[in-house]
Length: 463
Ligand code: G6P
Image 1 (cartoon, helix red, strand yellow):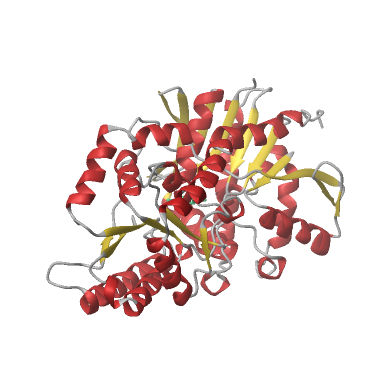
Image 2: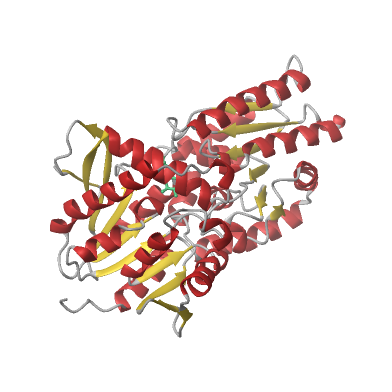
């Protein structure tokens, strides 16, 4: 098995008690690296006055990490700028929130070059190199420019937007063109892959070939669908840990006789939290008899706090949760417990297990692993109900969930009623279908699917 070099913006610190505010991607990649051996390279999360390319190495829990510090200006223009003010909103269909600053594009290019310069000496000839996510789309091209001949893969964890939206990006042509430096590129769903192919065919005059290949401007790449999963066995075991059980009891004791509806999301406008609160409010309005019998626990650790749109969504949700609680709360009941912090995974597992219903209702999401974790945490004899946005990548695999249009308050309110009233038999039936998929298509399956495709690619001839 070839060694693996994973490159992503954020590198998770390998540790047994990975905290909940690590993105799902981080959790998944750690599992994958433990299996293959190799290096995880990325940004340290720290700033430095002058970029030196000095590499910080850590070894632990079977994973080596190598990270670099970036300058303040890099972080502003690349991470807070191009990645999270330009590409993230655009890729989540939020052109209204997308900022097009030339400085951001410059910082993005510069940091991708810095990544390429510093990672290059760490890579051995037979390594598989796997680049992740929208922060690093041009990295493959930068590595090829520096002579790298390794098999090179790229995975996009966000949606790929329709061409009609993508063309609003001034440098869309170069960005997409740079993807052809990779041997294999992966998307979570057919939808995202389809949008990519359409761009290549319609905008670049490219063509589709056999074996998932896409060709444009004389270059060919394999573009595949590989939906990411979770480490299901590990998460199921975590759910049975003492800490998870204790947390579940704690949840029951804090709300005797009330059904818990849970949401767990990074505080991000793509997650549909505002619409979720409004849907829950509609449920309370429509169902006066059920008030006091349920409560919504929304866990939303803040994220990307330097970006204005994230400050705005936070203020918006503070006001909205306050208004709904003010309107509906009673002396001994709070309809929404809104918590801006993350929890360790065993505690999350306990919360999921205690929850009758999960609301996973992003407006747009590449995949969404909370949906899968919720399913993995359920009691097989008495499982809860997953309410899932049709616009999450996860919906393609999880059709046995209660699927909703997250924009519709009425639909969300109805789905909550349906979920709370669902007979045990139907809950078990739906859950069984869901867990079969979550077990079968877990993170190891995903990893093997992508890496098998990458292994099949040929090491390039010297230029
Ligand atoms: C999403 C992205 C990841 C990112 C994570 C957390 O899942 O696809 O690449 O790491 O969000 O966001 P952050 O900005 O904190 O890294």
